[in-house]
Structure formats: C-alpha cells, structure tokens
Amino acid sequence: MPRSPRGGVVDQRKADRLGIPLSQIGQFSGAGGALSARIAGAEQSLSKVAEKKPKDAETKQFVAAINDRLTDLSAAVTAAENMPVSRRRAAHAAISDQLDGIDADLMARLGVV
Image 1 (cartoon, rainbow, N blue to C red):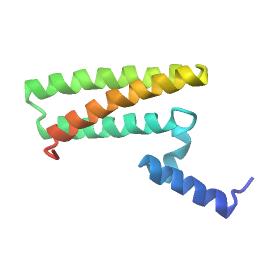
Image 2 (cartoon, one colour):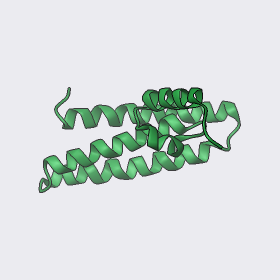
Image 3 (cartoon, rainbow, N blue to C red):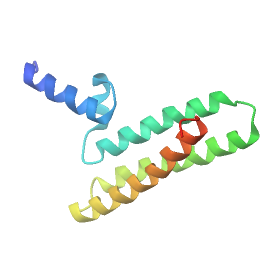
Image 4 (cartoon, helix red, strand yellow):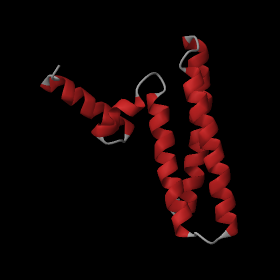
C-alpha cells in the first residue's frame, strides 16, 4: 500500500529527530528506537576514533571497551521493549545516562570538546 504524502513527512520528521537517514527509519522503531539510533551513531563515531589512531594501543583499548559497552546497551534496549512501561522508562533513562557519558568520551577523543 503506498504511503500518503503526510506519512512521508511524518517519517522524515522522525528521522530528522533521531539524526538518521529516512531510509533507516524502520531499523529504529519501538519504544527504544531513539536509543537504538543513538547507539548506532555512537558506533559510527567510535569507528572514526579508531581510524584517527589505528596503531595506538590505548585507542585500541578504548575502542574495544566502548564497543563492548555499546553492545551491552543495545541488548538492554532490546530487553526493555517487553518491560512494563514504568520499568522500561527507568531502564531507558539509565541507558540514556550511559550514552551521555559515552558521547562525551567520544567527542573528547574526536577533539570536539
């Protein structure tokens, strides 16, 4: 069934809000969609950190640790999907706090802050 023009506008706004291309909107659905999009963005930033200093041992260690953490957070988002709303909100808030710290570390490594 074709989408109405209004549906396309709504999808584009959601994609813009999540900071992802419209073509990826289906990958980030559900209550944890915004968190999943943030995790994907952090993974992309982590790749850039790894590319900046590919032979630096400390950078490799940082990348491995953050990658493991992002994998855990992604699993937590998936697990939270089936929780009651109040527990899901608490889990999402905790995941968001963790992502805030990761984002700050990534921005520092990329020389943004």
